[in-house]
Length: 251
Image (cartoon, rainbow, N blue to C red; front, side):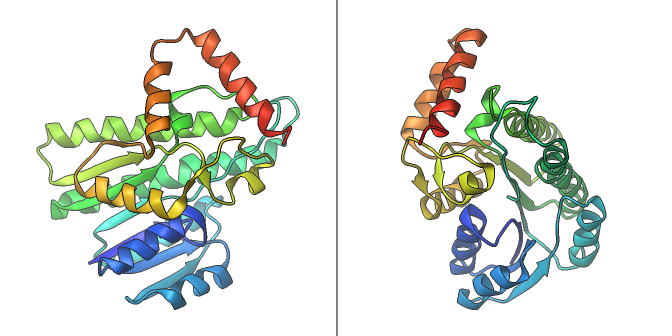
């Protein structure tokens, strides 16, 4: 049994690697930092292959697939991603384009290529790490919210196609709320609400993935919040999200 995990050097990705290793899975882990990946590999009990790549570069995404396509992978976890706080007219365009590459293009390409392989075998799991942001628009974190909307909706559409094909391949979207990771340090903000531990989110996600859950939302508060937004007008949603984001930068 083998799993490929992107963004595995920290946070949710690292804890997914730890949990899958405990379950007996050999791992291929990737992120930009080889040193951090090697630190993760040292603590795991199963076999681990480290591939250090920057997935904002499209050629590296294809390189990752070419290096792993013959490894008989059972699980693909598209976890790599980051955010950028700030008003859209003020944030750095190149940084946002890198975000779109990491948050959208990389998981799109890997999902496409590995889905084809999994369908041929008629088995396999794909876990796309989206966000509760995928259900909303995000003033002051616009591009991040938009990328997570894309990944969530892509996953949902593929899920239905697989059902219609009566495939034994399964795809899920993980949509957590605040999680205690390095996300805010990278994005340039902080959560007022205390986040769930990445260890809890990782275990919850994998357990639900194995139960073929389509949308995986850890935490009762987040689930309730997403449910309530269904009944709110869009303009009210925007005001609420804007306040949440602005409050982060006051911390």
